[in-house]
Picture 1: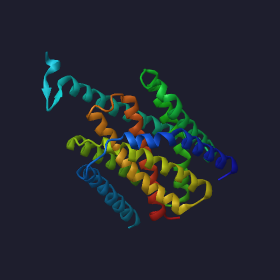
Picture 2: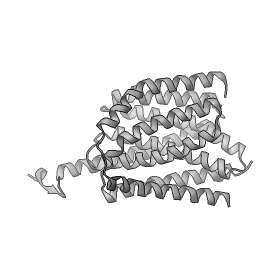
Picture 3: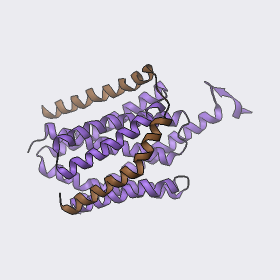
Picture 4: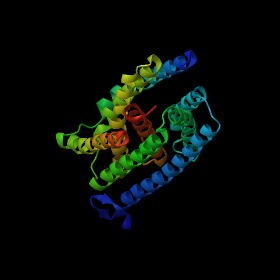
Length: 62
Length: 224
């Protein structure tokens, strides 16, 4: 990666940090809290995605 | 009078509005995906370099962060969406060219990542639509998680940390899966009534899923 690309990416990281950083705290504070059942309902399909990605990697390797 | 009819705890007008947002979102999403596939193909045909690809990606983020929010409630927002997705597709071209040239099974891996992304998106969307669960509680977690993963990804690219880059790809797959659940749930529960913003959110989720999946496949199954 050339120097100008590194500088451009670094500048983008700073913009993201200063633009979205303060909003991240607010988003966490204002977001509704989920119960254990809610989290389980979200983690179940995401666990399925993890297994599916592992299957894809295994299929691509063999 | 019919407007006040209640269906499963929601008014008929609310259900019709949700269906309209959902239909418009999926229609615009399919058009933007086709458009970005075309611009990616154009970038590959023109043999565009990594530098030009990066400039297009940065420009698309500028449009996404600073221009789209101003036009999201007007017809001009649709033009901005095509600008964002076209530039992201154009920036994707050099990445695809790299994988196709560097790996002997590059074509197979790109197609596997494409098909895998489609199956994950359809599966998660179907889960959110059928279960009708409310995933609004994921909002804060996703916001912070995506910001951390984004910054870590840039750090990995600047300093050439390949292991961190793979960790970030795995994080993005989990976060973008959560994003699909969150956004689809927001549409069906009336939390998102703007189909332009819904389209962009789902497009970004699909784009990142594809790129992250491709990187993981190339790292673990790529043949040089």
